[in-house]
Length: 215
Image 1: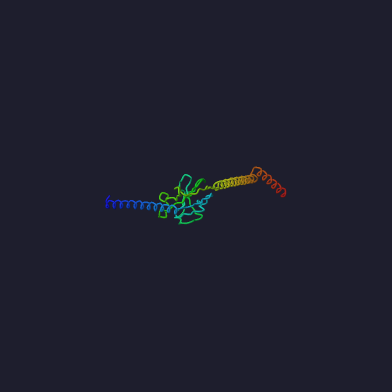
Image 2 (image 1 turned 90 degrees about the vertical axis):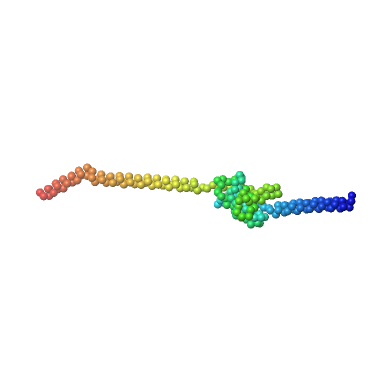
């Protein structure tokens, strides 16, 4: 092997070693960057069992490393409501207004979402916070919906009113009948045939007395 060939071989070998080292460094740097991103984006939620009040539920604790939202879904995954935009950090007693009061209670799920930059929640565009296994970070609670007693009370009131009206009408009818009977009796006692006979007898007696006195 000539000196020129030896130099060429050494140069080519050095290039191969340098390329391998550069590639390894690049791979290591990329892995470190991915780990950093995963570790820096995290969230925790605490969603306790509760009773629905004024169409809202409360997430007692929400810690979002990059800010975002807390959305509440039912067991089927339908979004029932979401919080306002939350700044990065810890938040307590986060109120979530539901779009409509559920007819009955059940299992509700609170999920942490990142914001895509517009500070407006969109379940299709805003990604959920995930753990190291790419599972959405969420918390489950059982929400109770109290039944309203307004309808039975209204029915009872209506029935009472109707009963009062019937009683009042019956009393008025009785009073009218009694008044009519009294009027009939008075008319009979002053204008009947018996009264005419008595008046005639009294008149004859008066005439006889008048004649006797004249004699």
